[in-house]
Image (cartoon, rainbow, N blue to C red; front, side):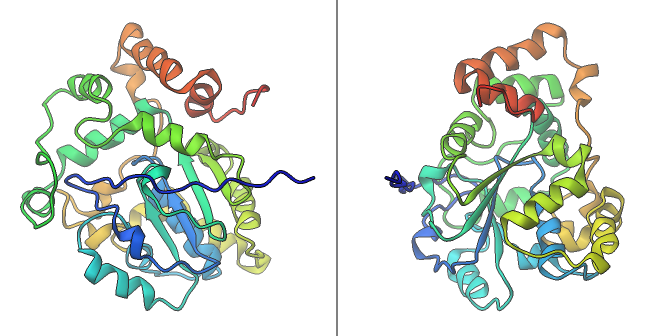
Length: 304
């Protein structure tokens, strides 16, 4: 007898300077929707680009940021965002940074979760945060609907930013551990795919074929070279205004600042061994050995 699947249920709302999770209560799913999920700064924009290339068969010049909105970002408000998404005629691919229990979960939609070592996330977040313009702070802090404290400015030291992020569980953004745990717990569901940033870096062609199979998009081999070119870091950096929200106006240096380096391990030359191990110890305590290992390396442990 086949074991019945227990699908995730929404149990709470999540609000802060970024989030309005209530939008999912009114989101009208289509059976072929694709939901891209990450904690943040884990390869979300890269995955959006990959899916756009698969859906539109290697087409150039796609306005990916417009096509694939961050649904639970409270700007623009849901009264603006939902009609725009509902009007889309192409296969939809949207993104979220919420934990599973703050989402309405569709058994028919496809969910792709991208993971990255937390230390790499912090380095990318710091670039994102320190280069934010006054307009970014104004949008997050001064527009109607913000719940909780405002988004503050980062410290001058990336080390301090790292320790604050660990000591206050995701500060100044949102909880890292609950996001990771909530998705890790549903990794075995048939409509959930886990992808690791390091695996994309190591074998992008292989990972794109894996993603295409999961979302059931046959690859047109005559367009394969174009797809790979358009998903490369260099191409995305050169065409960043198409991939970054509002063309990058919220960051000093524009969209190319948002798509920064795309590299891992920059923390190795900055953190002491003790500081680095602080993350490793906390990850194992919060996530368990198997999950912590996978998030750090992308390697599936034998005990899985």
